[in-house]
Image (cartoon, rainbow, N blue to C red; front, side):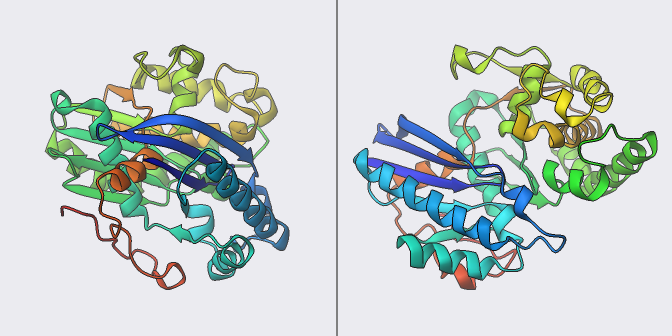
Length: 328
């Protein structure tokens, strides 16, 4: 069986096609299209007409490409950039009318649950009690569990793009006052979640997402060309130094650093600051970078054979609603 998923994020639309064999999604084809939707959001987080057109076109192209690779209909979903938009219904309706595909919006807590499922499968049972951090453009997901699914999962409005827009001066070198205020805000937002993680005492802490992958590369982890099976870690000490390096440069210069891509350069500092603050408050000295995240979590759900693991009309899913997960 060949399955696929389309992920509409703040910077790119990604397609992943996989063969479902022996209970695991074996990659067959991946593709991405850079949209930079964050640049099309107004002060009220509304996506403009041009952004909606680009989403429709990108989702349609991704679904067609999945079909050319022999996949069934992809599971298409959008992250916080669409979920939090006041005109979310308009975007979802435009995609369905323009492509015939249903674009889902998953509550942040469910994104955390799916990411945990993927990390657990990748890391295996020897990882023991497992914690997962995932920094996206709009949110930070935190999950912890001793089993296959998390014991708790939460989504916080601490995404790298969101914090850059709301607390930093974007392309400019931030002031000491801006950095101090942002740290204070992140510490306050993470206080209760960090206390829970410290109390649980995970044996292994993992990090997923492009933000953490790029930060790990900046801190000396092997480049992506060496493949997913090369071990990659990120220490709190190294990340603290990375925050200083990024804060001393304007966004355009950050893209010259190892691992930092131009589309994510402006938000890399906020991502590093959130990651370091979370590690410090949660008493984490080292993170293991996990190459599997939410897309693989969705593929795993589909492989498990419960076609109804996601339910509900996408335009009627209330913000923060829980999704039914098989086996729970």
